[in-house]
Length: 401
Ligand SMILES: Cc1ncc(COP(=O)(O)O)c(C=O)c1O
Image 1 (cartoon, rainbow, N blue to C red):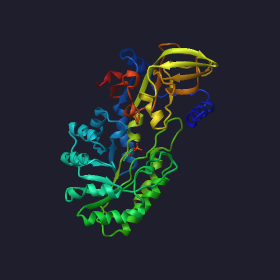
Image 2: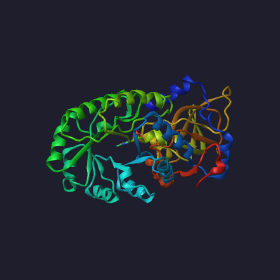
Image 3: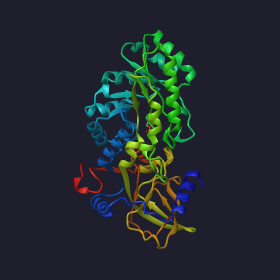
Image 4: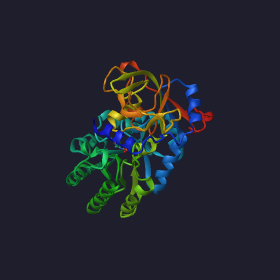
């Protein structure tokens, strides 16, 4: 059994048969199911408000640049725009999406450390002038844009406590920073900030705190730079199978560390997951059932090639439960939940205990907004689940799209 499955089994074993959907009004979900064919995802705009405001309250004075890569649904972006959010972009596609929604270039930063020239040119055409750089070859790409761009140098701080350690792939080591700054300055380029991303779904704030401390120390030493920004990246965690630190607590040591920043330096963050993950649930149906050995296999109409793709790419295991009310004292049987495709890797939950389920029964997955639809495929020609946008999931009458 792999680590994820073991984690899933352990969680369920500890809590016997918890009602994963207890915070939802089942009647509201039933109404949605009556109106829409499964599989579908429900994007709850009210949840976006809640997550954005909670993070902003926990990080007062920090400018939040929403990382589109986690979920780029236009309704989510429009809602964040109305809340005063800024945006973190990484590709031409993302540039064009925010542009089409009336967002201005100066409300964005371009954070992909590796870019084609045409990506730099398109972002500049849009009016986005702040770019992240983390290596010498990338720096050279900006020589011809001297005077038009402000550069932020990304530093690598490895983290064992993040589920996705992004500093493995990006960021320069601190020792390279003076050389990169020197190279920029000699070629007329403005370095104005430092950034890092200590990894997505960080389970402790301490890597971020240490990264802030080292970055501030570097800024203080490098007096030849007029520092304007420190960008503390994403990493803010959400609860999947296990509870994580409440965001207010998580951000206390982060804010304490940021208090040491010299005056006049703005602070940016690039949250993705924290804002988008709780905003979507996925609703799927059982389309097949087979007894194979000791376990009952239930085949769903979506799986890891679709909305559950984050189980492959993002190492997430989503809380998932039948929509019908479960009798916690009733009979449960060892079961497997499989996706619809012909590939045997397409299994959503192994060794899950479920009551006897029937074809047509509905299951609901929670916390499915971040890195789910974003990485879904149409393998086997199954379409990606459609997205139903609601203002508040408890009130389907307010359905927006
Ligand atoms: C450059 C950058 N910024 C922000 C994010 C969002 O991170 P998170 O989802 O942990 O908030 C990512 C995630 O991959 C990233 O690569």
